[in-house]
Amino acid sequence: MSLRTPPLRDVHDAAGATFTDFGGWEMPVEFDSIREEHTAVREDAGVFDVSHMGQIEVSGPDAEQLMQRLTTNDVSALDPGDAHYSSIVTAEGSLLDDTVVYDRPDRDGFLFVPNAGHDEQMADRWTAHRDDWGLDATVENRTTAYGMVAVQGPNAPDLVADASAGAVLDLSMFETTRTEVAGVSCLVSRSGYTGEDGFELVYDNEHAETVWNAFDCQPCGLGARDTLRMEAGLLLSGQDFNAESNPRTPYEAGIGWTVKLDTEFVGRDALERAKEEGVEEKFRGVVLRERGVPRHGYDVTDGDGRVIGELTSGTMSPTLDEPIGLGYVSTDFEPGDRVGVVIRGDEKKAELRTPRFLD
Amino acid sequence: MSFDVPSDLYYLESHEWYDPDTGRVGISDFAQDELGDVVFVELPDEGDDLEQDDQFGIVESIKAVSDLYSPVSGEVSDTNTDLEDAPELVNDEPFGDGWMLEVDGVDESDLDDLLTAEEYRDQIE
Image (cartoon, rainbow over all chains, first blue to last red; front, side, top):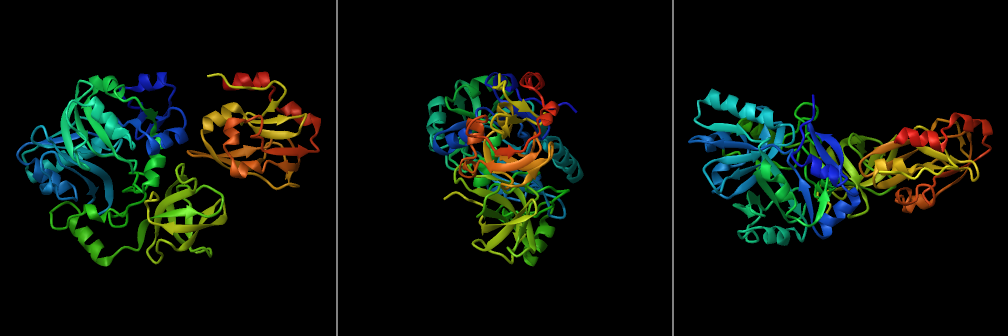
């Protein structure tokens, strides 16, 4: 199957980017160096093309009910201009995806953003359930019509404010407005995936280059996005959970707070049981205390050879200059405990941490 | 992009280089660029015997793990311990301070199985 290409593919190529297949999209993985891009976001600002993220609009009289019944957070608590992080789970309570749900500030209805390569699956899921439930809602997969950039870092708010016609600095976390950025109408949300302050902007694809060029800061690829999100302890769909190969409930994944059991949604009863029963493994961080780099698939041990979990992500943290990993570890162990990570057969000393490594 | 390919070195298709004058082994400019930011290098111990084409270590960048293969057979007479604290030397000076090993007792005939600089340049271009 041929890769889907973001509208800025040629612009990135001209800037010297290298590319990778990410969720079926040919996306820039690196412009200059992951370390350089990562540091720019922590200390200054960086701009990411995240057009591979899905964009699905849900509108009509029953749009709120459809969203409520297919996501775990409480959509009814959103007012226009609000957004929240949420989960999409199977009837058995396993995470299919995580997403941000926007209650649109500019017109009735919702926009939600599934992860790369999940847009068709989610659009199908939404329309199938809408039909089963006889709801009056329109579901439109706008993934190829909309582009998205993220501007992240301590100086990102000023950059976005300077380029925006409307006020954006007053937006609180996850608050969304529609305004012109470099003359282009954008949905601007104070959100991101790096652990830094910043904004995500959604716009019609025909204006992709104008919006991309509006920010005079470090262009960043998916490599830096991955190291940044790992330091912030944020889940990567498909890697840190996967409904088929690594099914996890939101409680195991450490995002139980996105589950509102007083709402009705697919998977609610399973998650109520899961909450009552408690979890045997939970999403944790590890910091290696010996030389090496933790990676996806490496075993976590009790430090004495007994396997107590497995890593799902890992890297050398550019900010902390320490080897860090994320994964699922037995709840018999707590953050602060000495553990081990098995690297090519050797058990390396490590410390269990909460998933967020940043201060 | 053009990469540095010193003409006095010999190369493996897997991008390691060997300097017959010093006995040193490292990875090429092309390889370090492909890997990106190198964050960890695992090398054998001094005194270990190497066989040509056999794996002798690991180099890890932020995004990838790669095996290292020996261009020649011989005994490890020295390793670049500077890489423990400064693995980025592999990126900064792949043919200089980013060297990895020194090998003793190399049979000249091993060179026949390696790529010349010209052949290696053809491979990566």
